[in-house]
Image 1 (cartoon, helix red, strand yellow):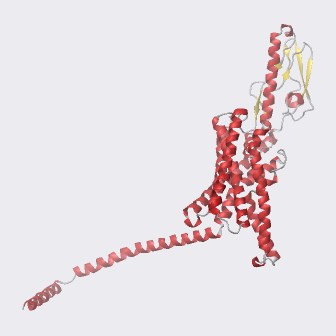
Image 2 (cartoon, rainbow, N blue to C red; image 1 turned 180 degrees about the horizontal axis):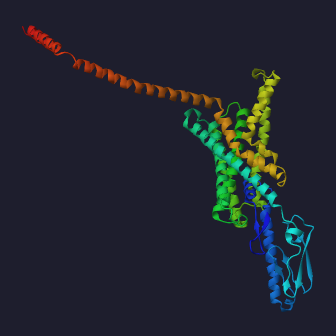
Image 3 (spheres, rainbow, N blue to C red; image 1 turned 135 degrees about the vertical axis):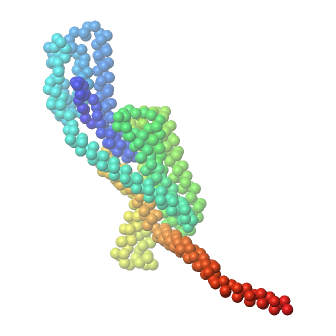
Length: 461
């Protein structure tokens, strides 16, 4: 965040990099309870309010009219001083914006009033380098393009995968129904990111720190619901795989509605509780902060619990896979082959279980902010694409069915084209035969008629 001088006046105005706000709000677990830029704005406003209150008290107190009254210079507050007094203020006490907090600024109280600040703020205290902020803005702008491309790619691939699983009757089974619901949760998550970006950050002139509208609150609530649903459907996938591996015979439809209840029902209950709590206890801003810890834990605790359970299931599934791959019937004597199959199975399970989120799940929220954003937002934006690719488009059954349908469509197209080509040929040959008959000689026609009449006469006799 930087301060920029107004043209034609001695005042100052606040500016901020709104892309940082986008990224901080998009990650499901923010690194701070309030964005640092917003915290500085709040600090600045509180200092101005306190200065105004002191000035009002002085105006009511007639004995305080001598000397220079309390003055707000749009950066810091200069309290009342006597004529001839030089007031010295530390840069650290003025604002946290300054790069040099060891410097000092001075103002002299004269008979005509306060003098100018000397030395100037930018010289004594040093503002943040604009080049550094421009570099940071460029970095986050590029990163925003990356996660936008990631979520867009995921949306297209997930919608295509849902279309494949729903159109072809062969794929209508409990396993693929669970995959479809997982795909829908990823679709909601990508859509929620785009909706939130449009509502909160489409206009850079909006006050992102203090905006509080039903639209922005709804966008943030929908975003939180999509995050919850996505994590719980990742948990359902883990539970389903655990059930298949642990139980030899299982009636899959018996558990399907329980999976639906876990995947959609629990997130609905959690987000409803969170919305009601925020509305009655902390109805400030766009509900995108984590100032009140117990309200934030309404969402964070279930997500953390689902990650922990999924991690335990992931370890157990790997253990079962090791046992099965080591069995003689699967070729367990070949160590290199066994290691390759185990590595392949593990890599396939990581995006399905969301194990990359475990990197920061149990670390303090201010640990590795940039790495957290890269993993949870950068890599996370492509997770839907990877899941759709691995569990739909690279699936052997899906590929065989698509090839079969493509061959059938190609054959029908060829036969249809051949039929259209044969039809004009048949019609032209028929017309040729008729024209030949029409061109036959009159003598031939007379002789034929004479023979017909003669034959009739013979038959009559």
